[in-house]
Amino acid sequence: MKAKLTKTITAVFLFAIPVSGFGQIAPDLKSAADFAVLAATDISFAPPMNTINNMDVGLHPGVRSSITGDVANLTLNNGVILAADDDPSNRLPQAKQDLLNAYLFAEASTVPAPATISGNQGNLTLAPGIYKSTSTLAINDTPLTLDAGGDENAVWIFQIASTLTTTAGGSVILAGGAKANNVYWQVGSSATIGDGTDFKGNILALVSITVNTGATVDGRLLARTGAVTFAGGGTMAELEESQAAPGALTITKTADPQTFFDEGDLIDYEIVVTNTGDAALENITVEDELAPASPWPILSLDPGMSETITFSYNITEADFQNGFVLNIATAEAVDILESASAYVVVTKEGLLISKVATPKTYYAIGQVINYDIVVENTGTVTVTNITVEDDLTEQIWANITLGPGQSWIENTSHAITDDDMSLGYVDNTATATVSETTVFDTERVERVNPPPPVPLTTWAIVLGGILIAGFVVFQYRRSSPEKV
Image 1 (cartoon, rainbow, N blue to C red):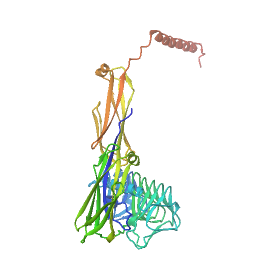
Image 2: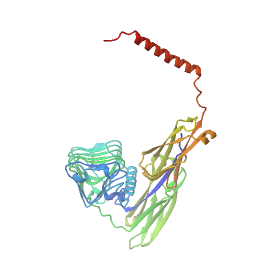
Image 3: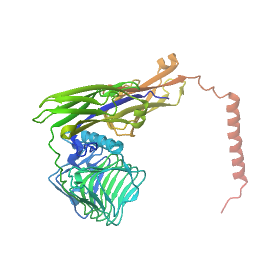
Image 4: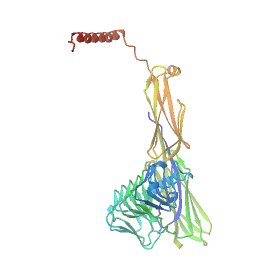
């Protein structure tokens, strides 16, 4: 039975950070930055002893029993281990959402224009910027050097369509003031850090991450849908944070409302530019890539004062296909070379429900109709607190959580009643509800005439056949010689 599908979009707000080198913005990990390891399905630590310093370990929607080897094979200094069923402050759902937002931002970043790279990056030196690989990327045998050129706020974003792998000797070296905290590896499938590799940066992987024996990671291992695996002897060191210039100009950006149901709906954006310094700023230019009226000039802004700009954007079908809407707002005071940026990621939620009856027809009171109910998360974010109801059996299933692409399946049944026989059909509707979104599917089974009785002549033929067969067997046994 074809189900009815409701499309929903959720707006997620990410606030400004000053940037060095106007135009390049680092992904904002927000609460996900507290975790050295963040995974979805399982986390495992094999011997010899692994070490994680000054950060936490989190698993969601996986449960505590899916974290293995942590007692015998992990030294966790100044951190905690959390899982979906062991998260007292409920930190993990937001951390996974912040990981998704940062992943989407890193994947879609185009300023400055990405440089295309491919294959083995060993023995190369790369300046700050965005680097894009349309397939796999590797660092094999010799190190890759990232040189900040004296700018400790310099940012690298690596956009990798498929896998990232390193081998022994394929380390990452930071030079010129570069910080591991400002290096982002967006991986379209899975990453493997090779034996003995000294790796730098934050890995944001769609699926899974493996740290092979003796590898050291100055960064974070953040897996959206899969596992994080330590083969043994791995070390994760505390990151050295870069110090952003204090600046006198800040910008924030928000979106409202937070849910959308159809193409053509509006996102209302609000941009607030504030002078946080001690002197007036002049000749400020504010730009936003989605706003038709951009850029906006602000001639003067006194200390402590703000300027608010609003505009709207229509949701397009392409936004639904992409799974998110990303846009960036920037403010620049040319005279004093102050700049700031903010970005908003809008992600898609969706639920699909289907209900199938077996058999499709009935003809007698007491006949049992079996129903299969399937609820699928068709969006790009984890959906929690889903409630499913079956109106005919009055069954309710609550507190269901589904990650992107995951399904929930349940079976129920109904015995045909006298009223069903009189009505001639049975309609059964299942609904799935989360927040203000409801999807439903109705399955109809219909009454049919009972199968005709077997004619007496047919019974006579069957009975005659049985008697003849018995007589033949009897005669055969009589005629067979007895064994002594």
